[in-house]
Image (spheres, rainbow, N blue to C red):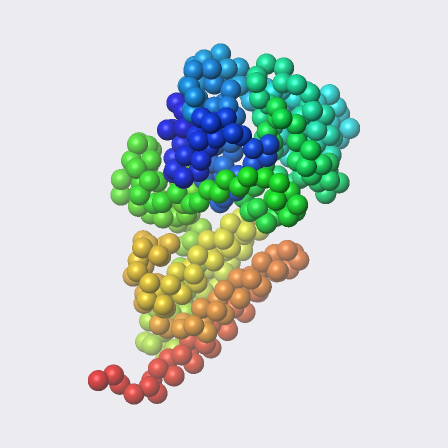
Length: 372
């Protein structure tokens, strides 16, 4: 228990420990960093450490203060969940009760103005049980635009006994005036070696798969712990077949792609519209990897490390123009998805364009003088 249980980002943890030990706590902090690196978790740990009755720069999880802090957070989570279930929008914002340690999250797409009004009211009262009140706003970028000025006024005139913690993946999503009034706690992606150690303690992940899961988790411990490798590989397979139909053995067919395999792959990618966004996200990783290979970067920079041999075979055939066209085709597919247009036609058109570029690339390479 305590900060030692937090995985990665030792610099950020050390900065928070120092604040707690010296009792020099800013009136507002901003925790930023990629999804899944533990921003909210660390903010909750910080709130407990400020009110732990045993330790000076950490929290024990066992004292009265720590137990009471967890009870407050549990009550906040249950209250948020219950309010989200209410169909009556007016009832959803009735009767807010904020504790000395409080978690505020979006009730709809937004953190509503009534939530920020209650936060501001409570912030200016003396804490009921603890020496310091900590109000944590998760997904702070979702604060409704009508409530931003209320939050800004609180940060400008912060009371001595309250700390407001904003949690946001990208600090630039917040208004500059909000950012300027917060002490920044920046978290980065967790390195693969650390994620591998975490996976090694998880019996649910086979040893042979840990390296690939750690790579695909992209620095997120949370994602690594729940990553469904079979589902990922199943969703990626049509993309591999799409590229294979264009780039594998086309020389033996006079440069003609395997149209049957190609159309089967585009059909598989688009038959379930609800899954298409995730399919696109996986698809984007392929041109990124192809570009890294074309640039001569090491395998440690390649995401789809388990198919790197195939990617190394395909990259020279596509060249820069083909890879750029692939990426732009994915962008266009997303636009078609947003406009509810036939998705398979978009991918079929991309295949035709890539086929012409592959043919152009082969012809260009054939005209180059042999290397000596």
